[in-house]
Every structure is written in C-alpha cells, then in structure tokens.
Length: 448
Image (cartoon, rainbow, N blue to C red; front, side, top):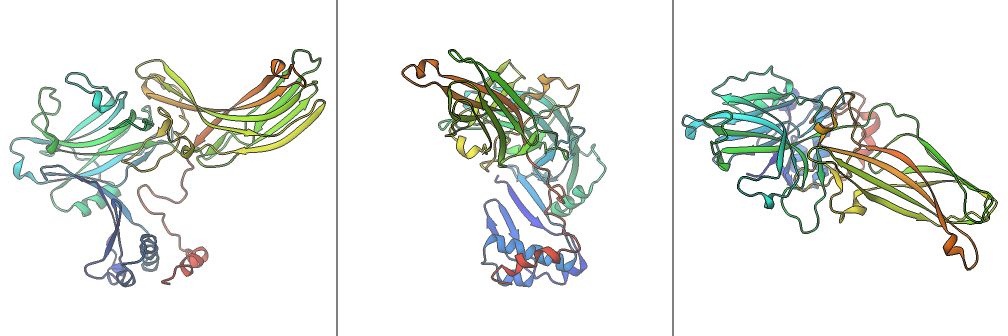
C-alpha cells in the first residue's frame, strides 16, 4: 500500500538508441531515479543527485527535454491502482488546474460491484483517535464522484492522460476533476509533540473504490477495496508585487513635554518563504526619555470560519535589537528579519501549508481571497502582521514606573514564488541554449 513515485521518459527514437536493456535505478525514500544512459548504468552507485544530473544531461543531448513523476497507489486487494502525474494543483485566483488521473483495473474479484473515483475537500477539526461510532470530527466541504467501470465517464484526453495511460498499460481508465476556485487551499494545523494521526486542517483526497452504488450511506466499503492519494491545492505569489506598507505614530509620555515619533515601512507588500524582510525604521525622539531597545514581532492570525468563529494569533518570530536612542536624538536604520518554521516546531496549532506524508513544509501562505467568495466556504484564513515596538524608559529611580512602549503594525503577505519554466508535474524544460549556463555545473561533477 506504499505510495511510489517514479521517473520515466517519453518514447523517442534518438533516446531509444541510447537506452540500455535493464536500466539501473537507485531509490531515495519513495522516489525512484532511473538512469537512461550507458554512462548512468556504469555509475549507478554514485549519489542520487549525480544520477539525476546524468539523466538531465542525457535528456538534453538526445533532444528529449521532459520527465514525468508518477504517483501510484494500489488497493489492498490488488484490483485498483490509482495513478496521478502530480500532487500539487495551482490556484491562480481565477481558476484551478484540472486533476487528471488514471485507474488501472483487475476485475477478477469485482463481481457485480462498480468502480468509482472521487475527489473530496474536507476539513478535519479533531484528531482521528477522537472519532467514535456515529461521530466524526471531519466535515466534507465539497465532493464529486464519477463512475469509471462499467465505463460512463469519458473525459477529453490531455497530455497528462496520455502519459499516465502509457505508464499504466492495458485496462486503464482516465478521469478528470475540475476544482472550484472558491474552495480553500490546503492548510494543516501543527500538532503537538504527543499528538498522533492526521493533523487538523483542510485537505484534498482522490479516492477510487469498489461499491454497488454511487452514493449509498448504508453500504460499507472495505478498506482493502480502496486506493487513495492526498493532493494539495496551492497558491503562488502574483507576478506583480505592490508597494510596501507604511505606518507611523506619535506618542507622548507622562512627565515629558514632547513626544516620540516612530515610522516603519517595507519595500514591497509581499515576501517569499525564507526571504529576508528588511524593515526601514525612523525614530525622532523629542522627549526626555530614552529608547532602550527595539523589538520586532511577526504574528500569524488563523481564522477558522467553517464551523465556528474561532480566531487566534500566534507569534512566529520575536527578535530584539539593542539599538538605543537618547533624548532629543534621531535614528534611522534598516533591520532585517526572517520568519521560518524551523524556529516554531513546538508550537501547537500553528497554521502550515498542507503536508504530504512526513515531508517538510513551511508556515502557511497568506490566504488570497477572490472577490465575491463567502469566507465560510474557505475553511481557514491565514494572515500575517509585523509589530515594531520601541521600549521607552526614563532615568532614575522611577524609570520602571514611567516606562512605556511605542508600537506600529505593518501587514505582511507571505507566499511561495511561482516557478519559472516549470511545467506541471515535470522537471523544468531545457531550452536550446542549455550549454551556455550549465557547463560549469556539469564540469564540477567528478564523473564528467
């Protein structure tokens, strides 16, 4: 029942002349890298990244510039095998990529049962071990089911379908799903150290199963008669970035005639995960107090709008800078911060981008809303803000009593960059002038 992913190349005359019989492969986790050249056969014991480089080099030399990664799941009875060409589907606000897949059948034990495939978007708001008979902490937001066998669903074949059909072989049936663009993106809530099972959050799942009827709540479907793969609906950052936000405040203090001015701004309104965020800070201290230090906090706000008005805020970064500003002095500088999940692994309930198996993920991306969509359908809304705080105190014995804070807030959009030159589910397409920028990379490998 383990998920497997493999790399294979389309048939090509120039490539076939260089393919050796019984190609060698090397496994790394659940992904299998297959060497397709004689040189890769001789170097099969080298590191996985070197095998990958050899594959890419062979592809460029032969004129074949495309490799597909295929995800496969087989049911316990061996009668159903689900194939998908990718597991991430991009929502560009106006539309979502179509889910194209294939199911390979072995009908010897089907009897009178039919084969169905479904795509479901669900929100889990409780751990699986809390599920009891008649009560499940899971709510289906959207679900669509089609019948594959006996055949009554014939989608228009896409290039992805044709590739998967070649991989699956005989007795394979294609299917397609269109994901509505008003559904939420995949988001999971980080479990605590002792929590087990699937995390809470929004997920998408493709499932094929055997049943007598399409939708019969009284019919029990055995686990061995199903095969399922979790997919993700994701959003990339828009191509155009807006102007950065700016905020300022002027605050007066007890026992001081004049105020402290604070101004903070960002260069742009959107930053990528792992990117350094420079914050321009200007301080004009006209008071008789001193600025002791500057503290910057990035807060994540998670709004669960599906089943309740549950809204909470958690800090994902808190950093202090020992910058001081004396009375009647000015300060101007740029301070940089980088909020990352690595510093927040133990915080239960933190919103993360949807996770596949145990692979690494990151802080949840900011939710981009389409105009006219009801928030209740979106399940979980994620937003960020930056708080710049000045800790101001006086001098003498009463400095603690007269201390105060000056704070401004800036909105922050945190997302993934849209990959350039990458086709869905494929390794990047190599351009004809590949040699101009890659020769150094290949020369640096020991076997070239």
